[in-house]
Length: 143
Image (cartoon, rainbow, N blue to C red; front, side, top):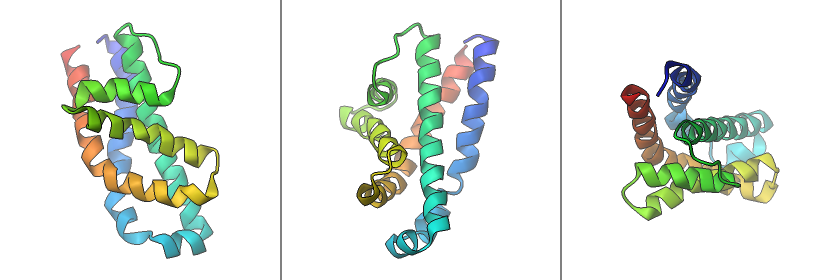
């Protein structure tokens, strides 16, 4: 990986590492009652989740481009592609690709589905993000 490519990806990795530190706090702090009744908390966590997934997509697309691959048509396919390079099982790559669905739910404001997807994100992120970040860091170091 060229230095220019590294310099584009590293800020995204730093952002994810910094923001993922808040994961356990959100898990403890926000439940259905808080989500439903406190507009500021609802908007805060929705924006936080959406921003993390957008950064994940950006990193994934950059890596695909660096490796000379074509960018798939959908975000889900992008995340499945990178997930298939990170995780040993297809089910794990599929779970990683579901981040795109969560982001789409938040971005398009499907109100009745948001809480379920946020809960899912909070549940799966601790298993998905450490391998993702390790993979990206290894790619950066290899180059």
